[in-house]
Length: 112
Length: 116
Image (cartoon, rainbow over all chains, first blue to last red; front, top):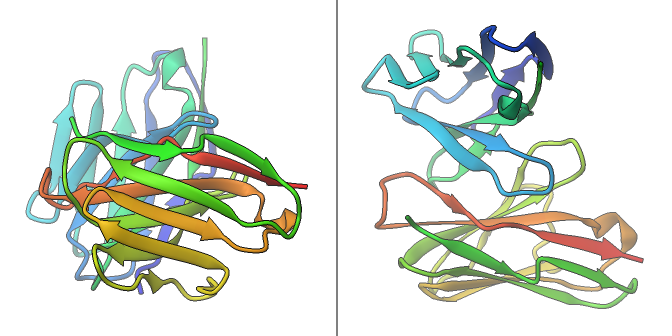
């Protein structure tokens, strides 16, 4: 099955700086890669996703890049704000059941 | 957008009892529902995948006789934790996928289970 690794596990940045979180996956057949933000005790919220037919996608301060050859994808948050502080999970769509396999999570802290 | 609800939001039970958690898609038909378990400060671990009208597919290491999943309709799936023990205490989250958005899953708010 799919194996997703995520780094770093914790990340602290100053407000206004950029944050980058990286994930690798093992199944070359995976073709959908969402990123979720989860606040304590709440459900994961989709913040951005990318499909395997594109290499980059951007939505305001958030961007995701995908390298299919190397089987890794990254989340980029620019101009970070304290409200960006949360745990972020990457995921890859597995086969055959279309299930998500999640990374281990990154706890992001934005220091005011 | 697509809305998924879960009930109850939190439950406390005695060891040995069974607990049922409901997951509902409120405004779309969920052909597939997924059940996850999340321990504190850990990631979401997929427990099982259920398709409407068929038996659930369990991930390796998940006891199907302990975690009973029923997906009897396109809007409802239930997870029953049978003979719960303190080590089953966790945050259980469902998600649903259907014809709303290709590949995307919509998560429920989660159920916090505490077994005394």
